[in-house]
Length: 195
Image (tube, rainbow, N blue to C red; front, side, top):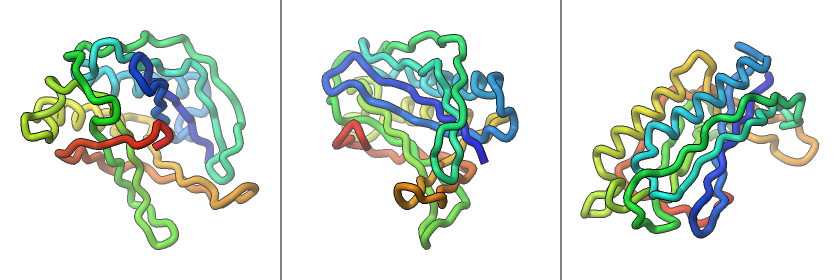
């Protein structure tokens, strides 16, 4: 099966850049329209929480969407779409560069005896807008992020969690459709921009 790979770049803070990568089922519309629709959904997801990102933090959805083969991760095609407007945080400018929130994407898939899940980190978030006084997530932010996550995975083109091949040259990669999204009520710490 082919997957659209959509990448969003985070910038405008110490430790940048950061990247958020999403995969969508390309079987529904394996063409430029499907690529553009997938990218637009990623932008909408982040647009739903832009008020909780610190001022100066920018999220840019890459206008090049990659089509990959799920079994081996090899690139099949590139789609150039119209650039989407850059999102910029409007929240308070006090934040910890490594602290934010995480969305857990649940699937019905099992691989090597483990349930397949994905995660998307949103780091950094505004201290005043995103966190409560006890260090947990502000309910307004958590509600907005949950709504944005549900909208992202409930669209016409399925959001997938891609489980990479087991090694170089292997062709045992697989992807599973996201069934639900969870936002734990606790701060997530991103130890590396590669997390």
